[in-house]
Image 1 (cartoon, rainbow, N blue to C red):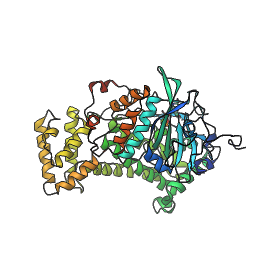
Image 2 (image 1 turned 30 degrees about the vertical axis):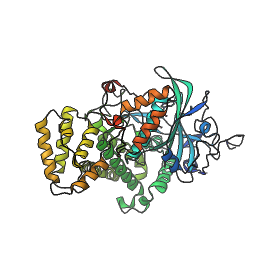
Image 3 (image 1 turned 60 degrees about the vertical axis):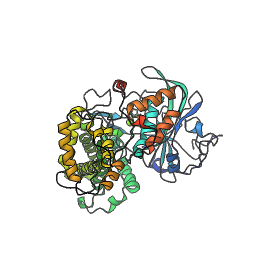
Image 4 (image 1 turned 180 degrees about the horizontal axis):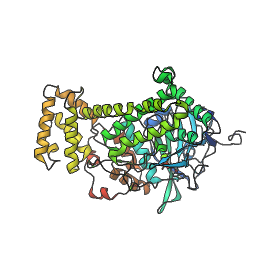
Amino acid sequence: MSLLAEDTAAADLGLRWKPGFRALGPAFLTELRPTPLPDPPYWVGHSEAAARLLGLPADWRQSEGTLAALTGNLPVAGTLPFATVYSGHQFGVWAGQLGDGRAIMLGETEGGLEVQLKGAGRTPYSRGADGRAVLRSSIREFLCSEAMHGLGIPTTRALCVTGSDARVYREMPETAAVVTRVAPSFIRFGHFEHFSASQRDAELRALADYVIDRYYPDCRSTSRFNGNAYAAFLEAVSERTAALLAQWQAVGFCHGVMNTDNMSILGLTIDYGPFQFLDGFDPRHICNHSDTSGRYAFNQQPNVAYWNLFCLAQALLPLIGDQEIAVAALESYKTVFPREFESRMRAKLGLAEPAEGDRALIEGVLKLMAAEKVDYTIFWRRLSQHMAGGNAEPVRDLFLDRAGFDAWLLSFSERHAQLPRAQAADLMLRSNPKYVLRNHLGQQAIEAASQKDFSAVATLLALLETPFEEHPGADAYAGFPPDWASTIEISCSS
Ligand SMILES: Nc1ncnc2c1ncn2[C@@H]1O[C@H](COP(=O)(O)OP(=O)(O)OP(=O)(O)O)[C@@H](O)[C@H]1O
Ligand SMILES: [Mg+2]
């Protein structure tokens, strides 16, 4: 019997729904409803861009029941919510079954977007935890999802955050919040690992076929790997992941929890927990306070992604059928990542076309920055402004080693000597954001929101949606982090 059969009231979001992932059947998910929060919900933040993406009506927040429905307090008309099962490797160790312990899928829209409520209550996969998310981590996830999109980086999106005064206990009492997330698919490497590790080959095949048919149809007609569609799929995921990692490294984004259950099969950034945009450039920066060994340090990320892809390859092995082919399907990661990374870094340097010596130019400036932990975002933006006609002094001022910087700047200028400066400046200003979601900015918005002032969430969102624009009057959001920023400790607790 339908879970909705007994509903007397449901909110109509004005969306049409289709079975999507749910059609895979009960081996993959458990149907259940979100658990209502005891205290009335309120809006904390919302993204009109995500609303347009979903095809919501212009007055979507005004329609009756929407706030309650997106907090999990009222069913959404036409949906049969569920939680999915996955497993994964956490911090390099097999963790066994995990699953959506607090993310509940409402369903998939006719437009092909899945909608999830993160923090909407316990599921059979909660493993003793409370199924909730706290306000601070929900604001961070909401803002960063939309910020990544603004930066042009593939990501799950966030429609809104709703809050409630309901208590949630972490290290201390906090309040609950729910993020409405949106993505073409929330399937992770861990979904494949789950069925492979438990030797359920039929389910593994059904899942792979579903993902290939929906998201990687070209793999069916591959001429590579003796026409092995599963190997072609693995290669395609490797390449998307490589391209994603290149973007993370170029923008200075540290994910913090690159477990295989937090790796999207579509190459999207997923699970915004202890992430951080670098302040000073420190390649070994560890953003997750719980990551004591530095497994997920900034400069480890490309290798970790490859390690995670290896886990995916292992999971797909029963389908691929040949170890050598599986390993071969991972190979392109090693060429796509450096190629994409160099291309992104060249764009940051205003270089549309490659030339010999570019790698040295990139490595040279990163080395100088690392030596003095120069602010990563500010450096690139000031360099862009210099290219756009500004004086070199503001860039120079970032370095104590003036001679070292001057030598680099000379080779940079020589590289640009024959190139049109306006075009280079334009490329740089489109590649080097002025605004990123630094920890302290998120923290200020969180502190205001916890006093029920949600204006800072909205202000930050507006800047982060178009981070390459100047936004006159908002320079305070583009400055150096205050001293207290380095004392912010963000851990897995969320
Ligand atoms: N408060 C909680 N209640 C129930 N399950 C939780 C809770 N926090 C984390 N989990 C579960 O623990 C596992 C690992 O958590 P992790 O922090 O990677 O994910 P998450 O932030 O909950 O969600 P997602 O990856 O969907 O963004 C997942 O199975 C997750 O659902
Ligand atoms: Mg997760």
